[in-house]
Image 1: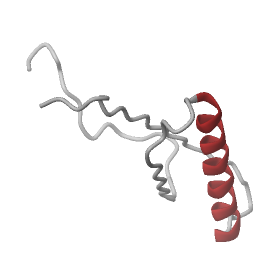
Image 2: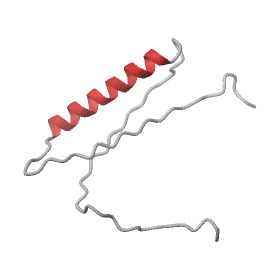
Image 3: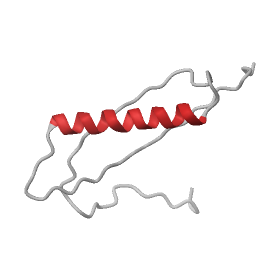
Length: 82
């Protein structure tokens, strides 16, 4: 049976491509940037959505290094043959 109101979800994905020649980005800066990005997103959503409409907010961060500029395609699907 359908719920009333129908649950809605909004997902925001941010991908920061950092260019720091001859430098490293440490854990403190990573955490600070993550916290600032989440706080800004929550503030914007809270300002735009009707009061009381946000049930829960979750946030997740993944930090990785990408060692190559050009990635090889690992998987591709030809929709015409599917």
